Length: 360
Image 1 (cartoon, rainbow, N blue to C red):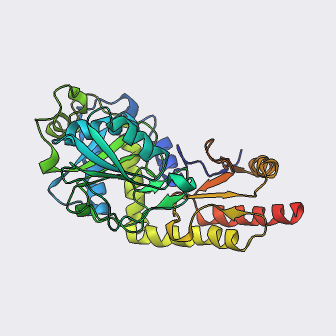
Image 2: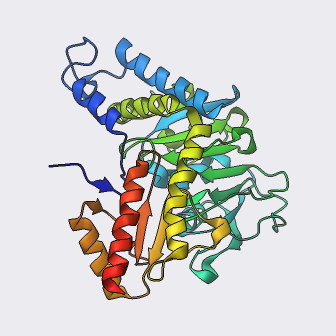
Image 3: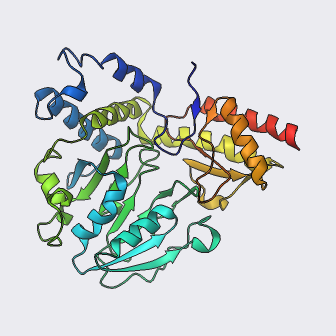
């Protein structure tokens, strides 16, 4: 069977070259006579894999030397608890609610201290990013938290909030490596890898060293202490070895594509094809305020639920899969991560044009 165009929000499309390489190495990784899946995480071969992966990520994101890179488990959702446990010194944090994931992180953090929602776009179904130029940041806040790109709602920050000197913490699960990032603007960046980087099961934390402390909340599990993980170079216990190996291959692929500046240009070109069509279409409409649109996740509707369902069904039959919108918003959503080729978006737009003609 031919490969489909996979518009899933995650786990999502991976570069074909990476999948082929992994397939070739499945039975025998570089003369070791075994798969990476079978390899000891303490072995020399695996040590090279994880160290190269870290170095390639550092190169791509230009991560300063005073930041640690941790390859962890538990997905992004486990970080909703780990962050307050590790970073709340004063027991206060400010959250900006721009979607379901920021809201879940906020609800989780409330178990560990005083948590304030200092801005929200819930009033318009998270279809925009609130003005964050002059927020009521708490004087004793340990950090300000954002979800950088909102997978479900298709919004993204194009200007960072003014945190008034407080540490900025960002969930970048759905737009990591899609464009350059100034890591120094953040105290902590984290991302579940299953959208733009690798298979589900790995979460990466990039954290400034002064935020890695022993004096965390006393009930913090050993596994959730950043110090435990940093002191052991992400090898305190068996890490998700195979997932990290695939991530390492994707980092190399992004490098070969020209790095993050080239990736941004590629993504802007790709997104423009879809957004330009949505802006001119008489049937399909984008749901996000133009200036806050995501490069990665593009939600759209026809305005008729039956027609939306018909579109998803016919698109799937034509090889455009996972276009159904998230259950909380309905409609459609095309996730066009780094590995989605431009022709995938071009062909989707051709299909949408034909569907519009047939159903108008």
